[in-house]
Length: 197
Image (cartoon, rainbow, N blue to C red; front, side, top):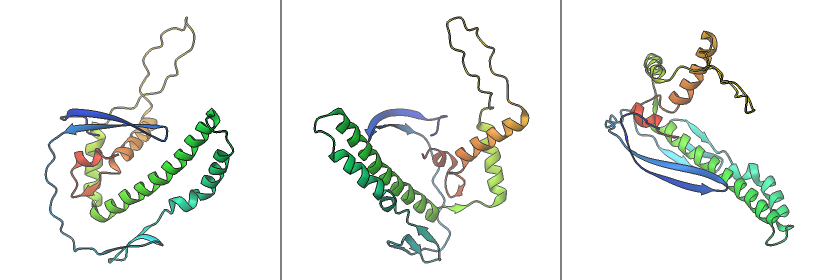
């Protein structure tokens, strides 16, 4: 999500199957993406594979419902044995809802990844390294985690010291991977790519 040079307009809180989400609407200036330069691609959607492309690429079908069907049946049997109106029945319904929500999330994730794979071209290695260096400069320096002591008379501890160089590099590499992985593509502005979750 972009944090610098944007105006936050609104935030919407929603709930689905016991999980809470916040959608933040921001206003930012994003340059127009360049025109597509590659040849057009034909896409055939199917069942065995999610999509088969004319250039030979195939997007795998995660088969979300098939993989979770055994657990869903078990949860439905468990739900049917609960007394109507009881708290245990409400808990069982919540578990069934969570399982169906997981199936929906897996399908949605596969569609997003598949469409991104088709519409974005990978950066060359040199440009990729330059973009990684630019992102690394914007990340804060990692610090050691200090667990607070319990009790009223616990003394205030000094602020955490910086991590050793090797550990700091590992932590920063993980931060870069999380931040840079969705956005290192051609024809995609850096700010808008990093804003996707």
